[in-house]
Length: 293
Image: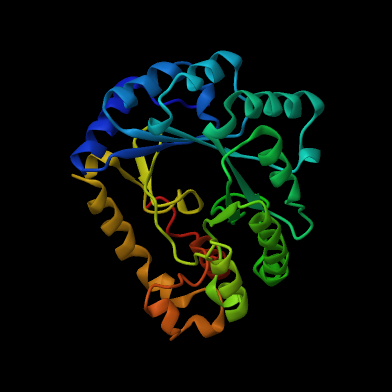
């Protein structure tokens, strides 16, 4: 496992501050496994930046205690979790310990990888451990150059129907859904969009194009396209330059979308929808020659 050095982390912090950003997301792998995790987090906090920490929820007790001491306004913890049956007894007990210890410092995230998933357990955990009443919901997406498990486009409509039922349960508990990557606007009916908005969980179907930085300072626009057009952080002056670089390289592919009727779609043209994930688009085109150019 590769870990970012503290000297490189300092370069990233300076780059972000030069870009006039005030927050940073920390993810992995599992970031709490970094051998100098506490030093790294403290370095970011000392720079005055807020942190959003993404974790799988299996965190050592000393790191849980460390996170509990951080000013709540400076560090948000998002635990991406799977159905309980995914874990062995030891790991599920560890996750429950972390949720109990951190409570409302934590919000939950869930990636939909199958039409058979049951999401109601998320609400049970929120109620049991008094977690934040917010759930990040994303689609599991095809990672280029990998054979990961993901939800196929043909199954998207089936999972939307399940999400609508789940959103109704969330609303009863005053819990909102934050939609992450992978959703298409046309997978929702107008009535479903209205109901979700009424539940304070409006669907999001455009790509925010976050910029990720790897341990070796390689940058990419999102994990699913992390093997395309790789550049280094030091090739740019600020985050907007990185974003512009990747926007210019993907915009023609974006216009294709993942469905035939994406071509000429006014919602795609207006930026209300991205036409589905680039991972699906490149998968459909069987594009491999762009790797690492």
